[in-house]
Image 1 (cartoon, rainbow, N blue to C red):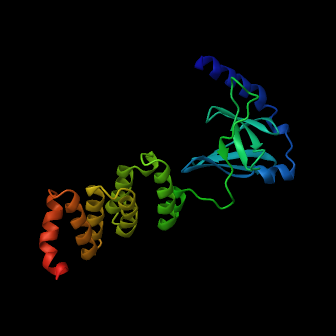
Image 2 (image 1 turned 30 degrees about the horizontal axis):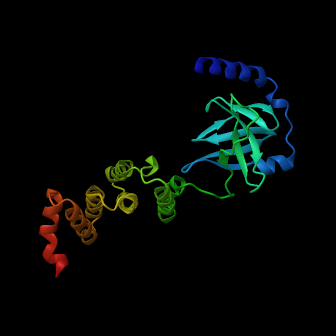
Image 3 (image 1 turned 180 degrees about the vertical axis):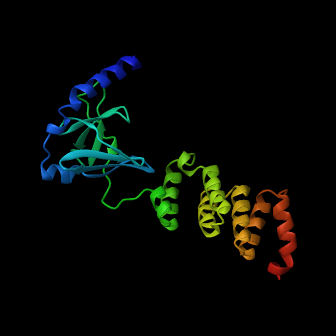
Length: 234
């Protein structure tokens, strides 16, 4: 069944690719449909036009879809056919995935977000750590098991900066991890190490103590706390 569907869409793409450049887009239509669409909680599909041609930017790649009509197009990279729709009640705009089984059915799949909207990972990339954390906390509130807030991914990212001796960046990433996973001994151990390497022994001491509150057998944390107890407890 999947093979048949793939062949059908492949043939469809070939049939329409030659005429995809013939569609003219009114300026109003381009204005209404251009922008970012929320593919998931930390990923955007960006729709834009160049020389009256439709393009998408998704996960860092520029995509020229196969245009089927002014309002419909096929994206081979996603293996999906889309149409632009507007919700009749909210008036919000969406990218709707056209079902092979029920093409007439309209679904509201990917919401168009306001201009300037950024996902948590975009804020993180820009170094806006407060906004990034705010976004990740919203994701956690909806789904505490979301892979977008995976503890080990953030830990790995933080240690990536540690290996490059970019300790302030590592600290910011690991602070986000600690805020997202406050019951994990590991997040405080990693954050304590980053502070220690950056020369901030007081913050290192605070975080190693938190590690020991959760996991008293951490030998590294024990040694650091013991060596610095008189310095920071008196």
